[in-house]
Image (cartoon, rainbow, N blue to C red; front, side, top):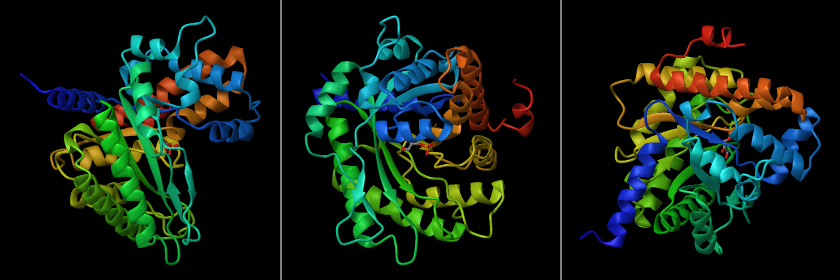
Length: 348
Ligand code: 13P
C-alpha cells in the first residue's frame, strides 16, 4: 500500500504537470490590496473592496478562459470572495476547469544591513495558513522573492536569505499538499546589461536549487517562476527577441534541474506583446533542446489591456473579457511556437 507521503507526492506531481500541460499557462491575479489599488489608481478606478471584487469577477467569468489557462493565482481577499449572485469565486474557477492557487508570502521588506535590498516575509504561521487554503480548495501556492540589480547588488546576504525562505516555503507547501510556485524575480529596473541580468539570474537560480535540495523539496512537484533574462529598462542596448530568448534558455539550462516539470515566467512589466513574442521565440528556438515545459504565469502581460478597457464600468465588461481572452490565447500560441504579430491585428 502507498504511504500517505507517497500519495501526497503523486498528487503534487499530477498538479504540477497539469499546471503546465498542453499549451496552457497560469494567470496571476494575486495582486495584494495595495498593489491592486495602485494599478486601479493608475487608470482612475476607485480603490475599494467592491471594485476589486467586481474586477476579479470579470476575470474569473471570462468565457473560454480555461482553454488557455490551467491555473489562477488568487490573493487572500479574493479566494474568499463571491460573484454578485453569491457563487464563490473558487467554485467558478473549478467549474471552468482551472486549478485555484494562492499567494502566500506577506510581501518584500527592507533587508537589515543591506541598503536597497529586500527579503520576502511570511514564514511565521505559514503551516496553518496553508492548511486553511487547501481546505478552501487551493492546490498550489506562490511566494515571490525580489532581487534588485545595481552597483554592488545583489549581495550574497540577499540572495542566500531569499533562497532559504523560498525553500522553507516550498517544503511547507509540499507537506500541505500544495504545489509550490517558486518565484525568484530579478528585477528589470536599472541600466544593467542583458549579460549582467544573466549572471545574476544564474547565481540566484543555482542558490535557490541548492536550498531546495537542502530543504528536501521534491523537484517533480514544483514549478519555477523566474524572470526572463533581459537588459535593464534604462540600459542603452536593448537586445532583440531572439537574443533574449537565447540568453534566457541558456541560463535556465545551466541552473534548472531537468526534474522540474515546468518553468512559468513572470512578465515583470514587459508589454503583453513582447512577453508573448519572447516566450514564443524560446519555444521555437529550443523546441527539442529543453527538458521542461516553457510556460507563462503573467499578471500584467495578460491583464493590463483588460483593466484599461474595463475602467470600473459594467458596460465594458464583455470587451474587457475579450481582451483578456485574447492575451491568454496569444500566450497559448507562444507555448506552441505559433504566436506572431498578425494575431494582434485579427482579434478585435
Ligand atoms: P507580472 O507578470 O505582472 O510580473 O506578475 C507576475 C507575478 O505574479 C508577480 O509576483
